[in-house]
Length: 202
Image (cartoon, rainbow, N blue to C red; front, side):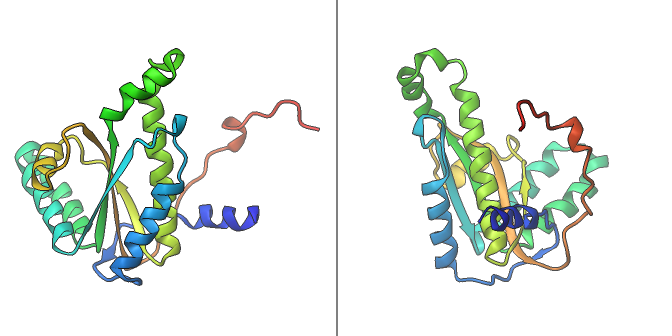
């Protein structure tokens, strides 16, 4: 079982070239996202993460907003590169907006006062775990995916467009679609002996 899970982790890669085709129904996408959100762990069982699923025209709307906002924000000499990147994201099938609900944090601080100064960091950990789980399950469903961070540039427009609570903090955008080509670029791996340290091994 552990080897199977390791295979899933190895298969999760970044795919940038995606089309707006889906190997599964929209209903299935919603189903797997709900299951991942339900079962992903969170510090103090705070369940702080929120996910907005954007499909079809709503997905296109998001990346149109990103194009408009970033064109007016980024320097002209950088825009050509980012315009291409944003249109590449727009060409995909859907996007998951990953949020952390800041309104929940005070109750967690009250629940664990000894850790109150770290609850915000724990919330970030919750979102990172959720993102990794969602990314992996989408690729197991036949999608390619990539994780984007165009926050905080797009936050205000996105919150207004979909009527989201102002207390939700946008952390990432998980873009998914059918891969056009393999993962890009080939991944280089650093020396694990510089990253992993073992004590007490028998």
